[in-house]
Each structure stands twice: as C-alpha cells, then as structure tokens.
Amino acid sequence: TSQSNASSSSSSLLPKQPQRPGTLKYNQIRNPLPPTKKQKTPLQLKKEFNAMRLEWKKRKLSCMDFVDNIAEAMEKKNKDVMGSKILDLDTDEMNGCVLPPPKELK
Image (cartoon, rainbow, N blue to C red; front, top):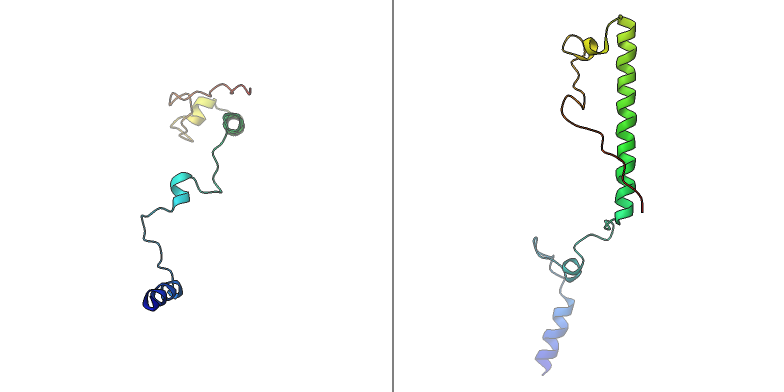
C-alpha cells in the first residue's frame, strides 16, 4: 500500500503533458465558439448588414462624384471617362450587382 501511495503522489508532482494537437477539451466540445466570439442575434446581423449597405452606398456615391468631376474637367461624358478610354472602371450595374434593400429592424 505504501507503493501505491508513493506512485499516486509522484504522478501529481510530474509536469502536465501538453495537449496534443487535434484534441478537444470538454468545454470546447460543449461550446465550440471561443469565448470572445459570440453568436450574433438576428437583430445584430440586420443592423450590421444595414451599416455595411450604407457604407457601400456612400463609397459608390463618392466614386461616382469623382468620375463626374473628372468628366466635367475633361469636358467628356461619364461613359467615356469610365469606359476603356480613360479609367477603365467597371460599375456594379455592369457586373449585374444591385444594391440590396435595407433590412427591416424588428
């Protein structure tokens, strides 16, 4: 019995083995997301979508304003400036991409 007590006490003194790659802890199995990354609610997702949509719209308007200013300074049409002659820009509409409507927040 003294040997079994000695072996159990010596095992607690040994340094812990590092966890092997690819093995999961019990908490990771129950909650697969890290504690810093929490799932978003539908309302949060809609707000984030609307914010990104608004940013897309602002950037698009800013870019089109820039093209308008260049076209006006060069005394050319917007299509000539955006086309392959000068800036060679592709618009969202040329690629079949439309600005989606905003999500309703409920």
